[in-house]
Image 1 (cartoon, rainbow, N blue to C red):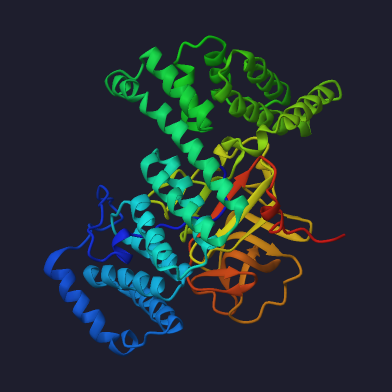
Image 2: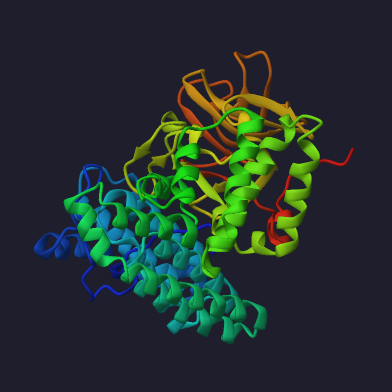
Length: 487
């Protein structure tokens, strides 16, 4: 599956207050879900504090209440039960008010603050808004596609199918046949992958007892790489799987070939293996070879370049690139803390990052999303540009995470936006020599006092940004978000 909408996590109890949340294992950065008398006391306090707002019943008034509650929850530092109830009540009010974005916004704070099981809780949100029909069907269905994707990635297939069931109803309500067909196609993919995953239960147990078991490594490696397109996690298993040429190719890849000739040879290896693969595995193997050919193309010499171009063209003709998961968006960073950029950090769904060395070969695009509210933009990108700063097609990329004026600078800027007034956020800034406004992290002009956040050249409240990269082609919808000025 490919990502179609930026995802959000939201607790089930947020919109179904009478149901208990399914807690996750406590994380050092998150609190356990409060219970009992402490929650009851917090409920009384919240309802008394916002008594006049609760009395208003119009949808617009409920949406306004939700935004107030989110703000109060974000600012609550010393009362976890009250923070918990504020987020829960915010989503309740947002659902009544038909304000899906605010309901989803409350989930960011809840997910960062408390140990709750994300996918099941997001399912509760969709079930609530679809039952109430306060949100357009198209919005619910598109959200379901992304939430199902996250559950799929986490091997939570039952939850993914339940989410897609809600999405199917919403697509039907919206009367959008193509959207309904997309949901149905994903249902079939989830079901097939779930069946394959369940067949590996004995292999997972074997590896827990003996990480070098050849057969178990082979089975899990083929599932991760050739069924789910998760090559980074699956290659070590494939390499230890004793699977002849497949294991040999995995070993070559783990050695991280840097020369174009070696990269082309590796791509050839994966292409040559296609006849020996099962039908369900060929798509991801082709897409993976495509990724290596594409990455090697710029440095290919005069003798090898025609071969690479021919291979790319032949793979494109198969149509596999449109559905290959390994060519979808790969998240490199999702956080409100730019200091973790280009590190291997995992402190939860909204505090995670990967080393840029793990970005795929042949990276063609970078997408920046403001997770809290949902918009995203796309720029052309290459793997070697990710860690630096550069200008291209009238837009600047700051990936160096430059620190100046008590702030990190990370994101995308418009090179025409240099008229920075006091309070503006400069995202692209190199030691005060040059700076532009844009999208992402930067410093506050004229204050130089703290980390700033910006979107479309304007300051915004503290936000979670997601940076993701893609090798495959953009969808028509993604192409609309591509920033590229006319020459």
